[in-house]
Length: 461
Image 1 (tube, one colour):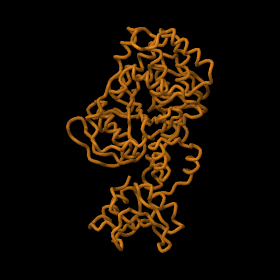
Image 2: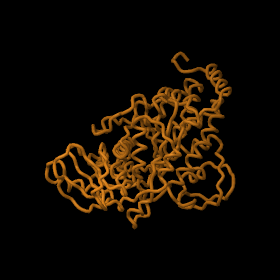
Image 3: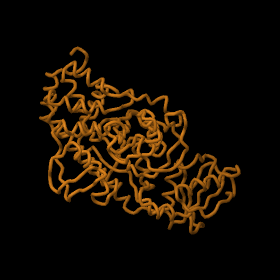
Image 4: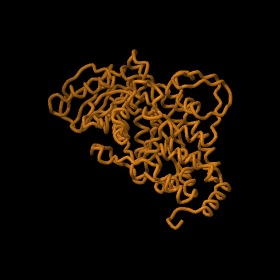
């Protein structure tokens, strides 16, 4: 086509090469699962179709919406892509969910980490019921929200209170960055109607529920057994929650990941016929919003080329280690909290571009230490009045039990977590919430963990 994009002959040659080599993995997220299919199919669909599809993609200008308080990029060459399944109530999406929901909602939230060498990738799901700290965000009307703690998906609604997906994305990025310490490089969002159109264009996707599903909230009534779903049933299947399994968001995440695997496999089979694929591409691009750097088929094609060679055994799906918040707050049966120190280790590994051992992570996460069970004595080692009280307030907000506050014998530069040997696991949880702290065993201490606030203390994570 004379513009650097691959022609049909080149595409057929590449497709033949793919059939002759072992099957490779793709980044199978809401948009990532069909990313390579989307751009490869569009490249062979003709110039008019390419222009049409390229123009469908919405661009969100995020740079001026994000302030300077962002995590440092610790691994050159790696990429973190924040992917959101948008539960917007605007337009045709209005019939889903509660009638009183007027703001934009996020139904699925994940971070796709691409290693700098592009030899492995991790897709990290963030349960939308994660109870986290949400920073102050622009609401879209010039006003700012106050910092507070709530479900992580509320950040999308706060920023999108006026219907602007750029504002919604900015608040979500700030929330994810401040709670994980991971700097986001790109953003993608796909709404309900786009997902349904993708499935319909492929003639539906086969699913095999083990038990019947009856969920009025998801507009779903399904018999048990294998069946092909499309339209409202497909949408309901990936959205249903309370009527399947334990009713948790974690179960829904697992179903969504399996559904997207099946969708991506079926889409790859149809990529050889641009005419047949056009409806699929049109539905996807019309409902796709990205940051400005990814807003177009050409940059998406470049990204697809980077990830298409990742082997399946080096593509890891996992969920942030967590446990029911009810273990911390008995009256809260609706949320989960991230499990420390396991969550902090996971974030640190991805920040430094280190491949995650999923089996080891899961093994280490089997026996969480509830935060209220951790008794903390806080000492002020800064030489400035009030620092112990400030730290104690932060600790209580995270659920820790503060037993006392006081002054350290002398000023100290480094913030330190110390404990007797029998409280080592409790100390690990606390230390993981205090960036750059030093840990040590203190045989003189008894019954509690001691946090000595040093001159380097900048707050909890």
